[in-house]
Length: 314
Image 1 (cartoon, helix red, strand yellow):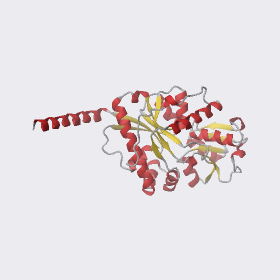
Image 2 (cartoon, rainbow, N blue to C red; image 1 turned 90 degrees about the horizontal axis):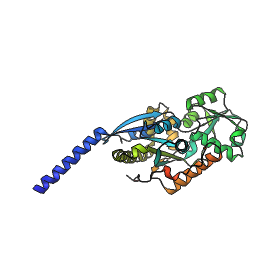
Image 3 (cartoon, rainbow, N blue to C red; image 1 turned 45 degrees about the vertical axis):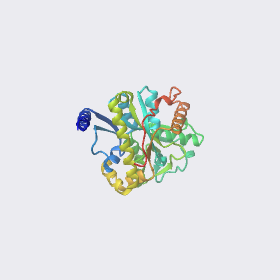
C-alpha cells in the first residue's frame, strides 16, 4: 500500500508540475497565409495542447524572417531561400524540420494573353516578386535555365498583393510567386504559369526556431510536440483533401477550387532534417552567392538543428 500511495503521489506531483508548465509556456508561432494553422485546425490537432500558442500571420517570408530575427516569435515556417537571407543577415535561428513539396506552384505567372511562352522570352521584361523570396529564387533559376541573368530583366520588389495588381494593370510582365497565390491567379484571374518551379526549386520549406527558444528546455519540448502535431495534421489533410480544402478556403478567404488546387498538387509532407536536405540547402546558398545576392559564402550545416524528429505513420 505504501508503494501504491507513493506512486500515486509521484503521479500527482508530475501532473501538477505539467499543469504549471502549461500555464507558463506560450509558444509564439509565425505562420504564412493558409499554412500551419489551417492544417492543424482542420485536423483537430490544436485540442488539448500542453502549452499555449500565440499565432502571428505574415503575408510573406521577409517580414516573418524579421520577426524571427527580432526574437518576436519562437518558431516560424519559412522557405529555403528566405531562411538563408535571414541567416546571412545574422539571425540567430535554426531549421528544425523540413516540409517537402512539389514546387510546381512556386512559379512565374503571366496574364492569359501574354506573348511570353518560355523562360527565354523573359529577356528585357519586368518581374515582380518579394526580394529574397522563393519566388525571387525561382525567377533567377528560370533566367539561368535560359542562359540569362538578373541583368537581362528588371526586378520590381513588391508584396504579393501589389505584385498581382502590377501584373493585372500591365506595369510588369511577370509575377514570380508561390502557393496559394499561384492557384488563385490561375483559377480566379485567368493568369497562367509561364515557368513552374519543378526542376528549379528543391521544394523545401522549414520550421525554424530561434536559438533563444531552443535554449529553453520547456520550449524545446513544446516545439517537438508542435512539430509532431503539425506533421500529423498534414498527413490528415492529404488524406482528406476535399474536406481540408473547404476549411482552408474559409481560413484564407480564397475560393475552394483555388485552395484545393494549391494544396493537392503540392503533396507536402514533414520530415526530420536529413543529409540530402542539407546538400540541397547548400546548393541554394551557393547559387545565391554566385548571383551576388548573398554577400558571403554561407556554410549551412550549423544552421540546422537535427535533434527534432518527425514520427511517420501516426
